[in-house]
Amino acid sequence: MSRVYLVDLGQHVGQEVVIDGWLANMRSKGKLHFLTLRDGTAFRQAIMSKKEVSEEEFETCGRAGIESAVRLRGLVNADDRAPGGYELHVKGFELLAEVHDYPIAKQSSDQSGPGPDFLLDRRHLWLRSRKQHAIMRVRHRIAMTIRNFFDERGFCNVDAPIFTPAACEGTTTLFETKYFDGQAYLTQSGQLYMEAAAMAQGKVYCFGPTFRAEKSKTRRHLTEFWMVEPEIAYAGLDDVMQLAEDFLCRIVADVLERCQEELATLERDVSKLQAITGPFPRMSYTEVVERLNAEGHPFEWGGDFGAPDETKIGSWSDKPMMVHRWPKDIKAFYMAPDPENPKVVLGVDVIAPEGKGEIIGGAQRAHDLGYLEDQIAAHGLPREAFEWYLDLRRYGGIPTAGFGLGLERTVAWITGTEHIRECIPFPRTIYRITP
Ligand code: 4AD
Ligand code: MG
Image (cartoon, rainbow, N blue to C red; front, side, top):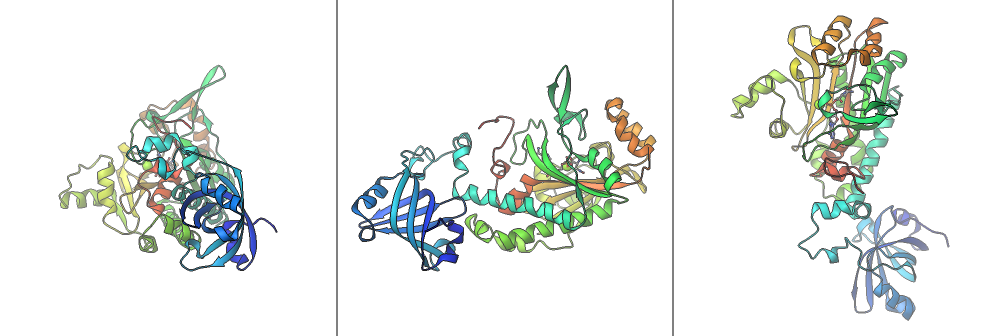
């Protein structure tokens, strides 16, 4: 008899199989133990009846605590009422690692329930729980879709470095690190490198960890997060807005198709996701400011939107909102000026629905050498560190355009998770670098 994964029980109905897993939960009633098993691939029910196993097996199982490692032999039954549609009738039971007092078992949450720090301190164990398992599976699915989407469209994956000599997204959130006798910064974005790569490969993307020394403690900020950044040569603002729209529709469609069990575990309202189809509303920053004020939400032209503003903007549509043409003074040095209004730049932020805030930031890049030289000076950036970047304008400079999508914010939106820290396996925030 060979080992079977719980997710594959459906292929073994009527057969006896062996499962290696852990006891996620158990309750007993007279001559029956009702087990919830998990083996990493899924959570499923098993029933152990005293008359189907030996006396010793029944007792051993009865005293095994939550998260004990177990090997079960059982008959697979199809049952529509069981979670996942199948359950096991246990015929044999072996306790591989006995556990008592699992620190985050439901039973041990008597100190008025485990708070966020209690669970985050035990993240290495918390990851096993049903909800966290589902969130990580959705994250995995989105990461796969990201790679598939760009590959299918002919984008070449080019990895950006993590040690960098200079800032991409402003100097206030730079992490500095010793680098032999000198210093380096952890990358805030691979974008500048993707511009170089786009001029070598046409259409490129990078996908990896990025770092921001965010001192704010919000539901939306991590100090280490994953970003995917496509960049296209000979492209402009409208091209990246269309790409972002197609990309988000594809991510949502793939999760809806491939993560039904996870979305059910998370009690996600899937009708909200089914509504994510193109076209998405597009508004200029100026139009947004006018509408905010008209709706009695005072906002001064020139400022950056905070979380309450983004929540308000996000409430205007069931779909992601594309806000374009931002005031030059609040955006990064590299954004191209709007030929029709020098006070604004050709940047776009995509704001997720359901109050989840900005998930994408992108732009057409300035390709004029003189303009960029002025911008680097105006932003107080060290010129030497950008000489290589300016070379891209000296040798065949043309408009490139691209965006960055934050993976964790996207996972938070799609899974309906309140806090971004549950959307990365081991979150790093201003107060946390453990476990
Ligand atoms: O808007 P941002 O800063 O854009 C860039 O970095 C561009 N260079 C990207 C590009 O054009 N290639 O960041 C992009 C996205 C945000 O929309 C957000 O989803 C995510 O990265 N992000 C964060 N996610 C979690 N924690 C943080 N501290 C984040 N900062 C940005
Ligand atoms: Mg941004």
